[in-house]
Length: 222
Image 1 (cartoon, one colour):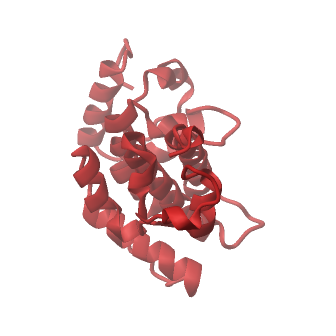
Image 2 (cartoon, rainbow, N blue to C red):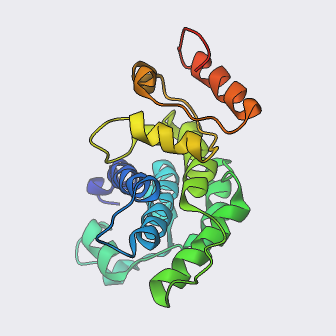
Protein backbone atom coordinates (compact mmCIF):
# COMPACT_ATOMS: atom_id res chain seq x y z
CA UNK A 1 0.00 0.00 0.00
CA UNK A 2 1.26 3.48 -0.88
CA UNK A 3 2.23 5.67 2.14
CA UNK A 4 -0.15 8.42 0.92
CA UNK A 5 -3.05 6.31 2.18
CA UNK A 6 -1.86 6.36 5.79
CA UNK A 7 -3.60 9.66 6.56
CA UNK A 8 -6.93 8.81 4.93
CA UNK A 9 -8.71 8.55 8.28
CA UNK A 10 -7.48 12.01 9.35
CA UNK A 11 -8.83 13.64 6.21
CA UNK A 12 -12.12 11.75 6.48
CA UNK A 13 -12.57 12.73 10.11
CA UNK A 14 -11.98 16.41 9.28
CA UNK A 15 -14.48 16.26 6.40
CA UNK A 16 -17.05 14.43 8.53
CA UNK A 17 -16.83 17.06 11.28
CA UNK A 18 -17.27 19.77 8.66
CA UNK A 19 -20.42 18.04 7.44
CA UNK A 20 -21.59 17.76 11.06
CA UNK A 21 -21.16 21.52 11.55
CA UNK A 22 -23.24 22.11 8.43
CA UNK A 23 -25.90 19.62 9.60
CA UNK A 24 -26.10 21.24 13.05
CA UNK A 25 -26.68 24.59 11.38
CA UNK A 26 -29.39 23.27 9.09
CA UNK A 27 -31.12 21.28 11.85
CA UNK A 28 -31.24 24.00 14.50
CA UNK A 29 -31.83 27.12 12.47
CA UNK A 30 -34.12 28.13 9.61
CA UNK A 31 -33.87 29.73 6.21
CA UNK A 32 -36.74 31.69 4.71
CA UNK A 33 -35.14 31.59 1.27
CA UNK A 34 -34.76 27.81 0.95
CA UNK A 35 -37.82 25.59 1.30
CA UNK A 36 -35.63 22.45 1.31
CA UNK A 37 -33.67 23.53 4.37
CA UNK A 38 -34.79 20.61 6.53
CA UNK A 39 -34.24 18.04 3.79
CA UNK A 40 -30.71 19.36 3.43
CA UNK A 41 -30.17 18.85 7.17
CA UNK A 42 -31.04 15.16 6.74
CA UNK A 43 -28.61 14.78 3.84
CA UNK A 44 -25.80 16.55 5.70
CA UNK A 45 -26.31 14.65 8.97
CA UNK A 46 -26.41 11.24 7.29
CA UNK A 47 -23.38 12.19 5.20
CA UNK A 48 -21.52 13.28 8.34
CA UNK A 49 -22.32 10.04 10.14
CA UNK A 50 -21.24 7.90 7.18
CA UNK A 51 -17.91 9.68 6.79
CA UNK A 52 -17.17 9.67 10.53
CA UNK A 53 -17.90 5.96 10.90
CA UNK A 54 -15.70 5.22 7.90
CA UNK A 55 -12.98 7.43 9.38
CA UNK A 56 -12.96 5.36 12.56
CA UNK A 57 -12.79 2.13 10.55
CA UNK A 58 -10.01 3.54 8.36
CA UNK A 59 -8.12 4.48 11.50
CA UNK A 60 -7.54 0.74 11.97
CA UNK A 61 -6.51 0.33 8.32
CA UNK A 62 -7.56 2.44 5.30
CA UNK A 63 -8.48 -0.56 3.16
CA UNK A 64 -11.09 -1.76 5.67
CA UNK A 65 -13.63 0.77 4.36
CA UNK A 66 -13.68 -1.00 0.99
CA UNK A 67 -15.68 -4.05 0.02
CA UNK A 68 -13.83 -4.35 -3.26
CA UNK A 69 -10.24 -3.28 -4.02
CA UNK A 70 -8.26 -3.32 -7.27
CA UNK A 71 -6.16 -6.34 -8.22
CA UNK A 72 -2.43 -5.95 -8.73
CA UNK A 73 -2.98 -6.24 -12.48
CA UNK A 74 -5.25 -3.18 -12.38
CA UNK A 75 -2.68 -0.89 -10.76
CA UNK A 76 -0.10 1.01 -12.81
CA UNK A 77 2.59 1.24 -10.14
CA UNK A 78 4.11 -1.29 -7.79
CA UNK A 79 1.85 -0.29 -4.87
CA UNK A 80 -1.84 0.30 -4.39
CA UNK A 81 -2.32 4.06 -4.42
CA UNK A 82 -5.09 6.64 -4.04
CA UNK A 83 -5.64 6.97 -7.78
CA UNK A 84 -6.30 3.24 -8.19
CA UNK A 85 -8.76 3.24 -5.29
CA UNK A 86 -10.68 6.19 -6.69
CA UNK A 87 -10.92 4.61 -10.12
CA UNK A 88 -11.55 0.95 -9.30
CA UNK A 89 -12.38 0.39 -5.63
CA UNK A 90 -15.84 0.23 -4.07
CA UNK A 91 -16.50 1.39 -0.52
CA UNK A 92 -18.89 -0.38 1.83
CA UNK A 93 -22.51 0.79 1.89
CA UNK A 94 -24.09 2.87 4.65
CA UNK A 95 -26.26 -0.05 5.76
CA UNK A 96 -23.21 -2.30 6.21
CA UNK A 97 -21.25 0.17 8.35
CA UNK A 98 -22.49 -0.93 11.81
CA UNK A 99 -21.26 -4.51 11.37
CA UNK A 100 -17.98 -3.49 9.74
CA UNK A 101 -17.34 -0.99 12.54
CA UNK A 102 -17.99 -3.61 15.20
CA UNK A 103 -15.86 -6.25 13.46
CA UNK A 104 -12.87 -3.94 13.02
CA UNK A 105 -12.96 -1.88 16.21
CA UNK A 106 -15.32 -3.56 18.68
CA UNK A 107 -17.38 -0.34 18.74
CA UNK A 108 -21.15 -0.47 18.28
CA UNK A 109 -23.00 2.47 16.77
CA UNK A 110 -25.27 4.06 19.39
CA UNK A 111 -28.98 3.66 18.63
CA UNK A 112 -28.25 1.56 15.56
CA UNK A 113 -31.94 1.31 14.70
CA UNK A 114 -32.10 5.09 14.34
CA UNK A 115 -28.88 5.02 12.31
CA UNK A 116 -30.48 2.63 9.83
CA UNK A 117 -33.88 4.33 9.62
CA UNK A 118 -32.23 7.72 9.15
CA UNK A 119 -30.16 6.27 6.32
CA UNK A 120 -33.37 5.08 4.68
CA UNK A 121 -34.82 8.57 5.09
CA UNK A 122 -31.72 10.06 3.47
CA UNK A 123 -32.08 7.69 0.53
CA UNK A 124 -35.74 8.57 0.12
CA UNK A 125 -34.98 12.28 0.01
CA UNK A 126 -31.88 11.97 -2.15
CA UNK A 127 -33.19 9.56 -4.77
CA UNK A 128 -36.93 10.16 -4.82
CA UNK A 129 -38.51 13.07 -3.01
CA UNK A 130 -39.48 14.34 0.39
CA UNK A 131 -41.51 11.65 2.17
CA UNK A 132 -43.80 14.26 3.73
CA UNK A 133 -43.61 12.77 7.22
CA UNK A 134 -39.99 12.52 8.32
CA UNK A 135 -40.54 10.15 11.23
CA UNK A 136 -37.20 10.90 12.87
CA UNK A 137 -35.66 14.35 13.27
CA UNK A 138 -32.17 15.48 12.36
CA UNK A 139 -31.53 16.95 15.81
CA UNK A 140 -32.36 13.61 17.42
CA UNK A 141 -30.07 11.79 14.97
CA UNK A 142 -27.17 14.13 15.64
CA UNK A 143 -27.42 13.94 19.43
CA UNK A 144 -28.55 10.32 19.84
CA UNK A 145 -26.18 8.80 17.28
CA UNK A 146 -23.34 11.08 16.14
CA UNK A 147 -22.72 12.82 19.47
CA UNK A 148 -22.10 9.69 21.58
CA UNK A 149 -20.22 8.06 18.69
CA UNK A 150 -17.62 10.81 18.22
CA UNK A 151 -17.30 11.14 21.98
CA UNK A 152 -16.51 7.45 22.39
CA UNK A 153 -14.09 7.43 19.46
CA UNK A 154 -12.23 10.72 19.88
CA UNK A 155 -13.56 12.53 22.97
CA UNK A 156 -15.40 15.05 20.78
CA UNK A 157 -18.75 16.82 21.28
CA UNK A 158 -21.36 17.59 18.63
CA UNK A 159 -22.15 21.04 20.07
CA UNK A 160 -18.57 22.08 19.25
CA UNK A 161 -19.40 21.77 15.55
CA UNK A 162 -21.92 24.28 14.21
CA UNK A 163 -21.63 27.02 11.60
CA UNK A 164 -23.44 29.66 13.65
CA UNK A 165 -21.52 32.92 14.03
CA UNK A 166 -22.17 32.81 17.79
CA UNK A 167 -20.66 29.63 19.27
CA UNK A 168 -23.00 27.68 21.53
CA UNK A 169 -25.49 30.34 22.66
CA UNK A 170 -28.32 29.95 20.14
CA UNK A 171 -27.53 26.31 19.46
CA UNK A 172 -27.92 25.39 23.13
CA UNK A 173 -31.08 27.49 23.39
CA UNK A 174 -32.68 25.53 20.57
CA UNK A 175 -31.55 22.16 21.94
CA UNK A 176 -33.04 23.03 25.31
CA UNK A 177 -36.33 24.18 23.75
CA UNK A 178 -36.50 20.78 22.03
CA UNK A 179 -35.70 18.82 25.22
CA UNK A 180 -32.60 17.42 23.52
CA UNK A 181 -30.12 15.63 25.74
CA UNK A 182 -26.59 16.36 24.60
CA UNK A 183 -23.06 15.75 25.82
CA UNK A 184 -21.69 18.94 27.33
CA UNK A 185 -18.35 20.14 26.04
CA UNK A 186 -16.06 21.89 28.55
CA UNK A 187 -15.53 24.53 25.86
CA UNK A 188 -19.15 25.68 26.05
CA UNK A 189 -19.19 26.43 29.78
CA UNK A 190 -18.09 30.04 29.35
CA UNK A 191 -21.02 30.68 27.00
CA UNK A 192 -23.75 29.36 29.32
CA UNK A 193 -24.16 32.79 30.96
CA UNK A 194 -25.41 34.14 27.63
CA UNK A 195 -27.98 31.38 27.07
CA UNK A 196 -31.68 32.09 27.64
CA UNK A 197 -32.81 28.77 29.11
CA UNK A 198 -36.47 27.85 28.60
CA UNK A 199 -36.99 24.50 30.33
CA UNK A 200 -40.05 22.39 29.58
CA UNK A 201 -39.61 19.93 32.43
CA UNK A 202 -37.88 19.86 35.79
CA UNK A 203 -36.40 16.41 35.18
CA UNK A 204 -34.73 17.49 31.93
CA UNK A 205 -33.44 20.64 33.63
CA UNK A 206 -31.97 18.63 36.50
CA UNK A 207 -30.29 16.17 34.16
CA UNK A 208 -28.70 18.86 32.00
CA UNK A 209 -27.55 20.89 35.00
CA UNK A 210 -25.80 17.78 36.28
CA UNK A 211 -24.08 17.46 32.90
CA UNK A 212 -23.07 21.13 32.94
CA UNK A 213 -21.44 20.69 36.34
CA UNK A 214 -19.60 17.56 35.25
CA UNK A 215 -18.18 19.59 32.37
CA UNK A 216 -16.93 22.30 34.75
CA UNK A 217 -19.82 24.67 35.40
CA UNK A 218 -19.88 26.21 38.88
CA UNK A 219 -22.88 28.18 40.10
CA UNK A 220 -26.62 28.08 40.67
CA UNK A 221 -28.86 25.87 38.56
CA UNK A 222 -29.41 27.29 35.12
